[in-house]
Amino acid sequence: MAKSMKLAGLKSVENAHDESVWTATWVPATNSRPPLLLTGSLDENVKLWRPDELELVRTNTGHCLGVVSVAAHPSGVIAASASLDSLVRVFDVDTNVTIATLEAPPSEVWQMQFDPKGTTLAVAGGGSASIKLWDTATWRLVATLSVPRPEGPKPSDKSSSKKFVLSVAWSPDGRRLACGSIDGTISIFDVPHAKFLHHLEGHYMPVRSLVFSPEPDGRKLYSASDDGHVHVYDAEGKAIIGAMSGHSSWVLSVDVSPDGEAIATGSSDKTVRLWDFKMRAAIQTMSNHTDQVWAVAFRPGGGGRLASVSDDKSISLYHCS
Image (cartoon, rainbow, N blue to C red; front, top):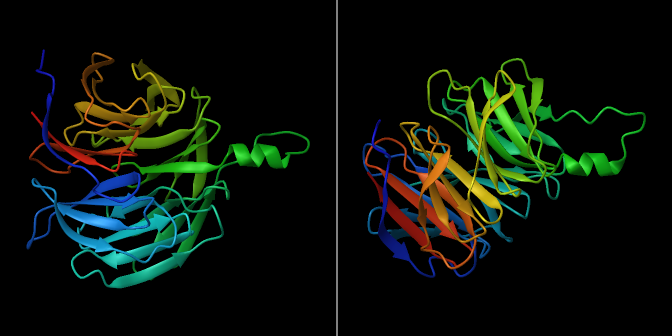
């Protein structure tokens, strides 16, 4: 049996932001610099950090409410931040020049992710019960993928609020998009045909985080829910492959290691957990944080790093071996 991954604390930065840190992602390396950690906070700021010292590179201002999501383009050259002000700011990572400002109605901008080729930015559309797709060449809205309403004689307004879309994830080949809703529904879309395919059932509370496994066939989807469970689905076959539990409260974030072997989660129980999917179990619990952990992010490529951010205003960086 292969040896399981282990986490070791490398560095923590207390008061990394002035308020809760809600979101984090890695900006891929370019020819001229290493990968950077990108964080967003209730303090309305976005910050870039250099590993491994977590040395602050820059603070981006410009949002007038808390930052709910950050996303990095696969080239590492541009990134985006989204705020409760319903604006998405697209910027040059190294110069901080604003490239585009994408506007949406109130409460219609949540999690975002660039597709693997970098041609499209997908934005979880919150109260619009849809995913919005923006073309990264023109920054025009090119598609709206709507989550179907439940069947019934008269869909009430209540039913649409249940489909409030919080989270979004691209498959490795960029052909599928998954989104997670407040009612626990996960919806799968065929992107080239802009078509809804099916729902994945099993969660009954908000799904705040989704990630596809990096395997080339890209069928395995991990989900994190307020119901305390991490589910693993075959996104094409609509089947649940496994369910894992261990957190004592909401699971707010899930990410998968670049080799697809390990999963990390962050929870409102204040812990980061490392899971082995084959064992369907948590193999390690890290208790660096003193408040809920909003995001966990493995660094892409090699060099084994995991970052976590929390309501305690801190960032933790771990070595994965």
